[in-house]
Image (tube, rainbow, N blue to C red; front, side, top):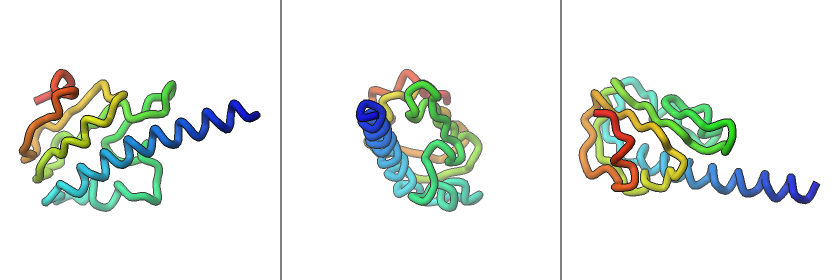
Amino acid sequence: MIAYAFLTTIIAMSLSTDQTALLSLKQHITSDPFAAVSRNWTNSSSVCSWIGVTCSSRHHRVAALNLSHMSLSGTIPPQLGHLSFLVSLDLKSNLLSGAIPQVLEILIII
């Protein structure tokens, strides 16, 4: 029982790191014409239920981020690099500027 509670706490803390990274991205978005991120990415819902976000069932962490074709404008914050379990990143057909965190460069689909 104690081990389960400890594991649950660790998962929640790790997912919190992912949530913070994604909320940083949200703050750097200056135009969201379809309101996909601005209305859906909130503290009141699990990051795993956010539009464009897929969490792994094994680690319960953000594994994929697909914001393609959302016509988003803004900058990519360095905090996006904190998504340590991310294996897929798709940002095509947006107007996002700034450097992709080096740790994520191998994942980007242009």
